[in-house]
Image (cartoon, rainbow, N blue to C red; front, side, top):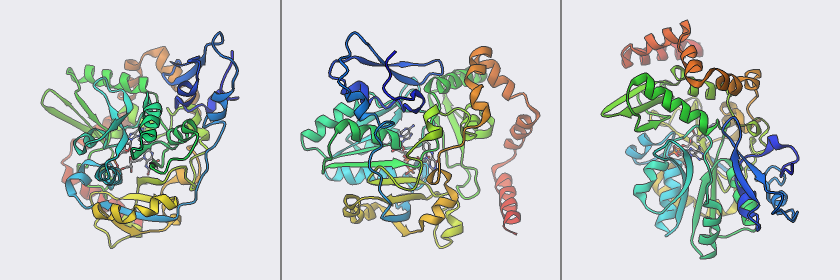
Length: 396
Ligand SMILES: Cc1cc2nc3c(=O)[nH]c(=O)nc-3n(C[C@H](O)[C@H](O)[C@H](O)COP(=O)(O)OP(=O)(O)OC[C@H]3O[C@@H](n4cnc5c(N)ncnc54)[C@H](O)[C@@H]3O)c2cc1C
């Protein structure tokens, strides 16, 4: 069977090939793990080679060394609270709206499927805010963005570096009025796995989940009570630490990523976008002068174009010059891709064989899980104090 990448494992599922094929000979189909891969209809394929030429796994886009590196904190406390880290995404999006542009971001739809959408109003940003730790589907955004750019409209495309690379290769030429922003990414699990987790949580809680957030600033950013998930069923908000959630725990331990993530050519300090943003973990260690209790982002300005927007960004964001070496100390994916654990060989197959529910219930039956669950029931103030003491010990 014909393939686009020489080594299928490197395919990122970005859809650039599907959208660029003039014969409509490529369609995306789910593999057994639930990741999308292109399939070529050989009766329609004329071997023109466009798909291979634009594949971001085959053709790595130009990478740039960051020109300016900042710790960044949104000035609006409500936006900061609603964002995963320092609110860079919202600041960039607001700037683009002010100039009459549109923004591409990721939402979870009503079926908990992560997908890229185009938005043009501030009130639509809330759904895009927040990290969704699952692979998002670019859907039709590449051709839609091309049309907008050809009509002269300013576009900001935000996403994983491989999504940005796919877009750039699909467009095939630079546009002055295209801005791109990637985040430092450790990898993406399968959408099918995430939806299975939602169904399992619904069954476990005996009620429908209507909202799921991967990050919640309950407690405080500094004290590490930050990876919280919560979901709303009827009127309740249910929260818990990520280590109590089998999907989330496997994600944090790099067990469930798409195969290409473990050899991602974009996991390094040189970047494929105008801007790069990420969590600025341990910012308090490098910038004790900052009030970072509600989170801080890393912000890179990588291109001449991005530097032109600095003044506009500063209207909504406080920017503090910071050092790339510090950021590389706390963000491993600025140095290399995530390491593939041996358990990646079996995890999806095990889940398929035993069923998600049995697998997840097994995870929740360990003594460690039960102890963590018990600890989670202690008052938040008490847990924060314990964290502070542990942090102090670690420093001494
Ligand atoms: C899968 C994934 C892996 C990540 N890995 C790291 C990491 O290793 N190190 C690190 O420092 N930061 C990582 N991040 C980024 C981090 O979680 C925050 O998203 C980032 O700090 C932005 O925070 P913010 O406050 O500026 O914006 P927020 O308001 O939180 O904005 C989130 C932005 O991320 C986009 N987004 C959310 N989910 C997805 C998705 N699944 N696919 C594409 N775009 C998405 C939104 O469209 C928006 O642009 C990762 C994010 C994701 C989604």
